[in-house]
Length: 163
Image (cartoon, rainbow, N blue to C red; front, top):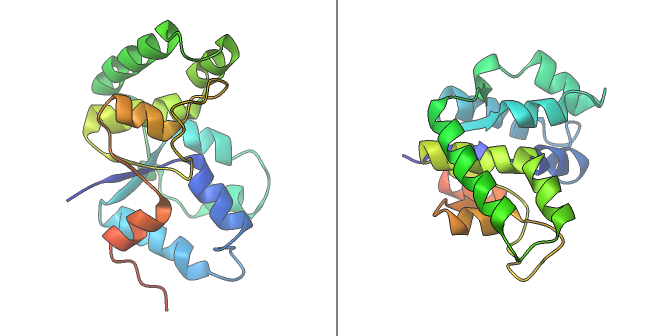
């Protein structure tokens, strides 16, 4: 059974667009249910990105999401983080700004955790291997043989039903 690791943009885009708390509360309940079934997680760096906006999403993260949803760094993560950081820093393909932004991002940590624990990264980012000014999650995943899917692919794979 695959375990999925959610990028910040999955939460933010869902809240702002198609699964707003006021129109699709069942989506947010489903996330918690999928987590309780040990299928769905995110990481502490994503938690840090979501918690400080003082909006409905940050309140949901603070009030409804169990602590175990956002996984803590561990030794396997540190090893993967080192390998992916070294790859990004040494790349001649990306601009220095792109490398520095990626190295300071939750995206790096998301891919590293997914790599370390054989999890599936879930992101709305699209692959763009020719892009030089930004390192995209799906492209890093491809480089390190980490499966990366869209939220909708994850929902279908997990047979989510909202009624």
